[in-house]
Image (cartoon, rainbow, N blue to C red):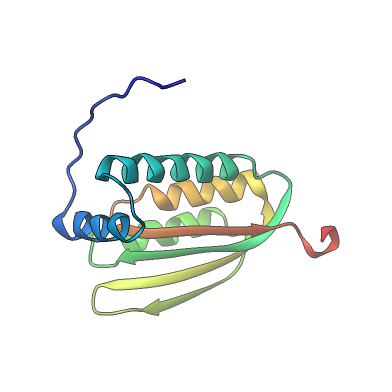
Length: 140
């Protein structure tokens, strides 16, 4: 059964659109719209997977952000302090003059981990966030 298609408008920076177009061409999509639909489906699946994180979890959150954005470094640190009981360690490196990478290693309640991850994602100037979780060793 075919669903009705809705038209939307999206504003993107040139470099992001050029990268996207290159990827969809390389993957053989028939149109940009099909690539966008596939990307949205993937995003929804990832979100639904993240929404189901419950119980004790261990893992990492990797973030890349522009430390030159006013207040961003402090906001990242403040969020980490809010979840200090979950965070076991973190590593911070400078990728270039403007960008930093942090890997946050955690052990704790999945719903709190998801909450921390979503707060980091919502910060303006954060360019990349990747959550990786696993059950604790005794459950594997």
